[in-house]
Image 1 (cartoon, helix red, strand yellow):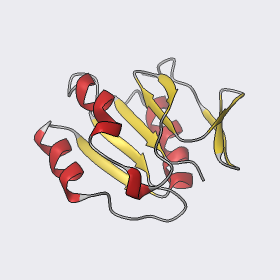
Image 2 (image 1 turned 135 degrees about the vertical axis):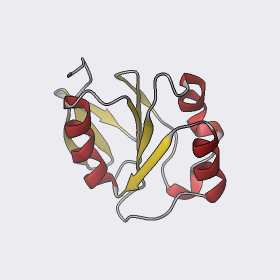
Image 3 (image 1 turned 90 degrees about the vertical axis):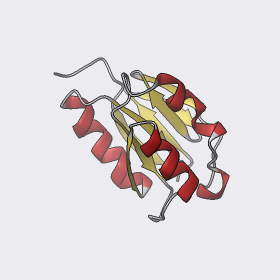
Length: 119
Protein backbone atom coordinates (compact mmCIF):
# COMPACT_ATOMS: atom_id res chain seq x y z
CA UNK A 1 0.00 0.00 0.00
CA UNK A 2 1.49 3.34 -1.05
CA UNK A 3 1.78 6.16 1.44
CA UNK A 4 2.10 9.91 1.19
CA UNK A 5 5.88 9.66 1.00
CA UNK A 6 7.81 12.23 -1.01
CA UNK A 7 9.18 10.93 -4.30
CA UNK A 8 12.82 11.48 -5.21
CA UNK A 9 12.61 13.03 -8.67
CA UNK A 10 16.31 13.87 -9.08
CA UNK A 11 19.63 13.89 -7.22
CA UNK A 12 23.05 15.43 -7.76
CA UNK A 13 24.63 18.87 -7.61
CA UNK A 14 24.70 18.55 -3.82
CA UNK A 15 21.00 17.92 -3.23
CA UNK A 16 17.73 16.28 -4.18
CA UNK A 17 14.46 17.20 -5.86
CA UNK A 18 11.62 15.73 -3.80
CA UNK A 19 8.11 15.82 -5.23
CA UNK A 20 9.18 18.74 -7.42
CA UNK A 21 10.91 20.78 -4.68
CA UNK A 22 14.70 21.22 -4.46
CA UNK A 23 16.44 20.37 -1.17
CA UNK A 24 20.14 21.24 -0.86
CA UNK A 25 22.36 18.89 1.11
CA UNK A 26 21.87 15.45 2.58
CA UNK A 27 18.42 14.21 3.61
CA UNK A 28 16.81 12.03 6.22
CA UNK A 29 13.33 10.79 5.32
CA UNK A 30 11.46 9.38 8.28
CA UNK A 31 7.72 8.84 8.73
CA UNK A 32 7.26 10.10 5.14
CA UNK A 33 8.78 13.46 6.06
CA UNK A 34 12.03 14.75 4.60
CA UNK A 35 14.34 16.79 6.77
CA UNK A 36 17.85 18.19 6.35
CA UNK A 37 20.51 15.77 7.57
CA UNK A 38 23.90 17.19 8.59
CA UNK A 39 26.03 14.35 7.20
CA UNK A 40 28.12 15.28 4.16
CA UNK A 41 30.34 12.16 4.04
CA UNK A 42 30.26 8.60 5.34
CA UNK A 43 33.02 9.47 7.82
CA UNK A 44 30.60 11.91 9.50
CA UNK A 45 27.96 9.22 10.10
CA UNK A 46 27.42 8.74 13.83
CA UNK A 47 24.87 7.19 16.14
CA UNK A 48 23.80 10.72 17.04
CA UNK A 49 23.16 11.61 13.39
CA UNK A 50 20.71 8.70 13.25
CA UNK A 51 19.10 9.39 16.64
CA UNK A 52 15.68 10.13 15.03
CA UNK A 53 15.72 6.68 13.41
CA UNK A 54 16.50 4.95 16.70
CA UNK A 55 13.86 7.08 18.46
CA UNK A 56 11.21 6.03 15.92
CA UNK A 57 11.92 2.40 16.72
CA UNK A 58 11.04 -0.87 15.08
CA UNK A 59 7.31 -0.09 15.04
CA UNK A 60 7.92 2.67 12.48
CA UNK A 61 11.17 1.56 10.85
CA UNK A 62 11.58 -1.89 9.36
CA UNK A 63 15.02 -0.96 8.04
CA UNK A 64 17.29 1.94 7.21
CA UNK A 65 18.06 2.55 3.55
CA UNK A 66 21.40 4.37 3.59
CA UNK A 67 22.85 6.17 0.58
CA UNK A 68 26.53 6.43 1.48
CA UNK A 69 27.62 8.90 -1.23
CA UNK A 70 29.00 8.59 -4.75
CA UNK A 71 30.60 5.16 -4.13
CA UNK A 72 29.33 2.25 -2.07
CA UNK A 73 31.18 1.69 1.21
CA UNK A 74 30.39 -0.11 4.42
CA UNK A 75 29.02 1.95 7.33
CA UNK A 76 30.80 1.72 10.70
CA UNK A 77 30.44 -1.59 12.53
CA UNK A 78 29.06 0.06 15.71
CA UNK A 79 26.21 1.53 13.68
CA UNK A 80 25.45 -1.77 11.95
CA UNK A 81 25.39 -3.56 15.31
CA UNK A 82 23.20 -0.89 16.95
CA UNK A 83 20.60 -1.13 14.18
CA UNK A 84 20.60 -4.91 14.49
CA UNK A 85 20.20 -4.70 18.28
CA UNK A 86 17.25 -2.33 17.75
CA UNK A 87 15.62 -4.90 15.45
CA UNK A 88 16.08 -2.78 12.33
CA UNK A 89 17.66 -3.92 9.12
CA UNK A 90 20.22 -1.97 7.12
CA UNK A 91 20.56 -1.70 3.36
CA UNK A 92 23.42 0.48 2.18
CA UNK A 93 24.53 1.41 -1.31
CA UNK A 94 25.70 4.43 -3.28
CA UNK A 95 23.30 7.35 -3.07
CA UNK A 96 22.06 7.18 -6.70
CA UNK A 97 21.05 3.52 -6.26
CA UNK A 98 19.47 4.24 -2.85
CA UNK A 99 17.45 7.14 -4.27
CA UNK A 100 16.03 4.91 -7.01
CA UNK A 101 15.30 2.04 -4.61
CA UNK A 102 13.59 4.39 -2.13
CA UNK A 103 10.87 5.22 -4.67
CA UNK A 104 10.23 1.54 -5.37
CA UNK A 105 10.10 0.57 -1.70
CA UNK A 106 7.77 3.40 -0.66
CA UNK A 107 5.43 2.58 -3.55
CA UNK A 108 5.28 -0.94 -2.05
CA UNK A 109 4.35 0.55 1.34
CA UNK A 110 7.54 -0.54 3.12
CA UNK A 111 8.23 1.05 6.51
CA UNK A 112 11.69 2.46 6.16
CA UNK A 113 13.88 5.35 7.08
CA UNK A 114 16.05 6.70 4.28
CA UNK A 115 19.28 8.59 4.94
CA UNK A 116 20.92 9.97 1.83
CA UNK A 117 24.32 11.64 1.65
CA UNK A 118 24.16 14.24 -1.12
CA UNK A 119 26.32 13.75 -4.22
